[in-house]
Length: 89
Ligand SMILES: Nc1ncnc2c1ncn2[C@@H]1O[C@H](COP(=O)(O)OP(=O)(O)O)[C@@H](O)[C@H]1O
Ligand SMILES: [Mg+2]
Image (cartoon, rainbow, N blue to C red; front, side):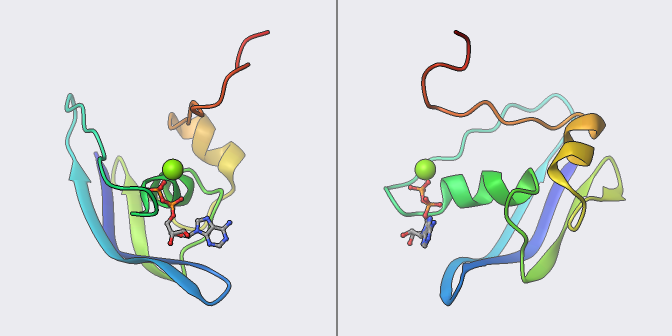
């Protein structure tokens, strides 16, 4: 259902994601775990279109979403609830 293939994301010259591969099937609940700086937030930012990968492919329901705008990705059904407080007033 959601697939990342060889995804590389940078912050300027900092190579944060070095070839991520991930497949999530329908009905699965997947948790990303890792130490600080491992790339969890960068992975989620890349899936949701907030960060653009330099290389690789992301597909959702067999449709490529790698280079589309975050708002369009939300409309396809992917959204991010940030960990920060005050999501609801
Ligand atoms: N805004 C940023 N500018 C430069 N480097 C960043 C930025 N955000 C994250 N990084 C770097 O990218 C890597 C992955 O960070 P991040 O995705 O925030 O990890 P996690 O969420 O797992 O703690 C780290 O090396 C981090 O220092
Ligand atoms: Mg984080």
